[in-house]
Length: 151
Image (cartoon, rainbow, N blue to C red; front, side):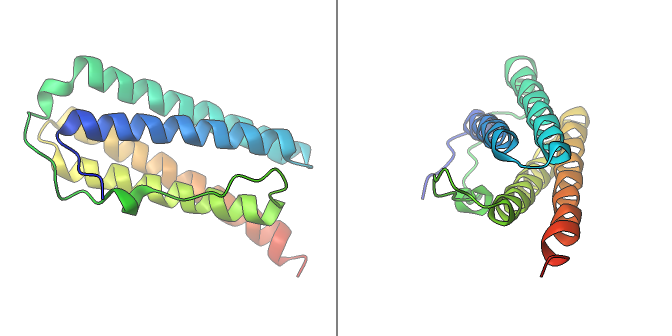
């Protein structure tokens, strides 16, 4: 298991996850059959890009608020969702992966919020967690309306 040496490692991980989520949603937008979901996936990609920018801003300007303590109790696997790369991901599979990714992101930001001292940065992580939770809910609704209804 990978161990984070410090909060910079944690932020780098979160930034990488936001980039991966953005790439994933852009791929889903390209392959979605319904125009409404293409739009939703593109919007989520844009939101993930905004999250990444916020995290980069914290890394560049707000890292001192974290201190330099070693962060060892974060379990990297708790925040990863493995996606087997394949070009023929079904709509149902894409929604399931998206829900799992948003849940993992919510857990990551909630965990980060619990570890920081600075209230402003804590609020940022809580805000990001809430946004990821809303994304997950949107995918759950989509799954319920289009996948469960068909079965």
